[in-house]
Length: 496
Image (cartoon, rainbow, N blue to C red; front, top):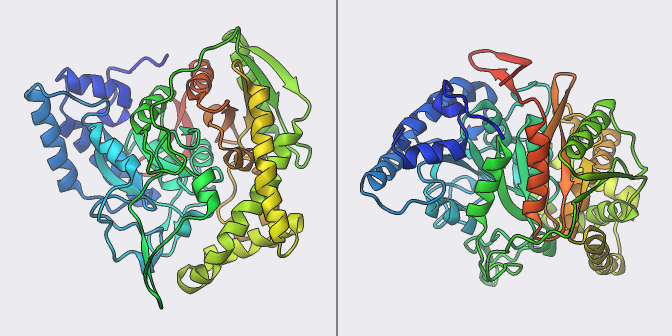
């Protein structure tokens, strides 16, 4: 387990440690928030990770948190801890802009369920994290808020769509961030910036959000979410350590039957039957891994073996390849009706990215997949879910790369149609998981070419504790590096 450095500045300390210190009145929430605000002032002008920061509101909330401590009130698990929320998630009084200027003028009237859960845990909402327009890229730039940089290397993506969250965490702006994931948007940014990201089982964290409406010729009509958003998208946390990610996930676990996939009670920790087995899947036979990616997987496998896990190599797991292909069918076909809106109000980058991405999907499924193919995709998905759950059972996790490549060069998805297709092929570990609805966590395992390289652990449904335990075992045996970022940028890492 990580030992907290007693000389660390408050912004450097973990949420778990700070929550304890605030409860025991060793430090105040106001001191923690001021430390994070100072770090934001130092690093955010370069990284552009957080937007719409309102210091006075955050400090007022922190002072209220401190009064609650002094009064002996019952305190939540994140009492007084700064947390960021994403620009595509409803937070009362803030625009749910999706990085689109046309959507930036209307403030949300209420909170999404995950934001409510953070508030009720005592968290201090400190800023909004940047994302790509419509949250549909593995990059985080838009014409409304600008480009977010990776603190390890400005020429590389911080990931997307929760790239502002991951960049801000790596730089120390907050210890925890809220994100969401339908194609790697929690896990990939966490990996790009060397932090931890967990995508929970669909339904564990409520995806409910206040209804949105559109004016139509027939009158005002509620906007219905497409099937893939309902069945594949999740809310979840990013954090600098596994322990903080676990803490935040437990806070965000919100039984809520307003969510069509919501659960009525928090899931209990699943029982283990014998030693946990780790099955290593390095690829699906469609793309070659960068040597640094293979090394990260090998390092993680060795660390898990050292921790007592039974580790085996699998030559192939065809159901993951099939799941990644089905993702390219269902996600893009569900997004197709949105294209007129994107073309009307989106920026040039998102229009180009979607054009090339649809072209890559067409190479797999044809220019306009038939309704029969779409229905069969959903039907086949259910079969694959059953097959994977049977494989994982009660004592197995999968260890995979996060991507076949190191963090992509900025704007790689709009460089050319050919490069966009390479990205989609490389991201099979990110695409295979959401379409099946399973939990997965990414955790740093190595450095390559001065960049963090992470691995992914996939567990059975509601087996978040099992994969977090495995991630903790990797983290405990991995040197921890952070990017050197402050008054000037450097991609040189330093150990802490």
